[in-house]
Image (cartoon, rainbow over all chains, first blue to last red):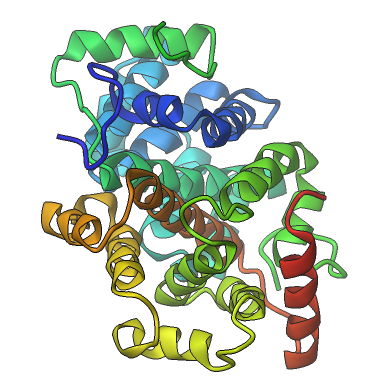
Length: 182
Length: 177
């Protein structure tokens, strides 16, 4: 049961933005800009950072839905998502992305622990200011979404099929504010 | 020194919004809608939640400036914000607001730390659904700002005087521009 009355049968963030659309609208716009606007990181890589942080925050709704979006966007290489969640250091991703995931993990735990060494390592593998900025911004944003979704105990679907459908929607049309059923 | 090249003349979030202007419209619109309303929670209470969470996250940039903004709403209680930062349970605030700050403190640790008992307590003290919602969202939002600022290694260049001045301006003008 959610801590406040929300639209029945509507999961996670979708139920919250229906409850308060005037805060929901900028939250969805923010997600769209972060995850889909131009960036040196691909939408798939950015969804992967969102998934990794949500997974570390044990937010099942956000982790499962963004994992599904990342799988959809990685397409032929969709298997990489679960390998990263299992152990990103041994996953088949670039050294640059590994170094950025380390930074994202520090932001999730305690952002003050991001160090000069972490940033230097990412730069040594080719990360530029925008890569570092976007990684920190995405990690920080998901620390908000995860807390918002779990802090109000929203509905969390358990079946994988529900998330696969969400992932395809997120991978194609992106983040569009859901409307309350009439 | 910040980890990326930013305009050194701009403090805290201002430097980041100027680095990535495309995030400014949604973020400022969210701030204006969520922080500048007296429906349910007052503007002062909203700033107190922001300050308290930022102080738990030990984000100096955020807790120092939002403490100044918050204090502007409590002119007759000049020590209120420092009391709340030190121990909100012994501060002169309502039991309802204490129950909501308790929820905000759990959100700071993680969304799943919020318990049924904390929510029931807040409701018993008269908190509405909207007040509980806004408390959780403000606490979550400042977990974002704190991480964005500290994760990029942004160091405050404020002085006690500049904090007071900027805090007063933010309290008066809000976040809409």
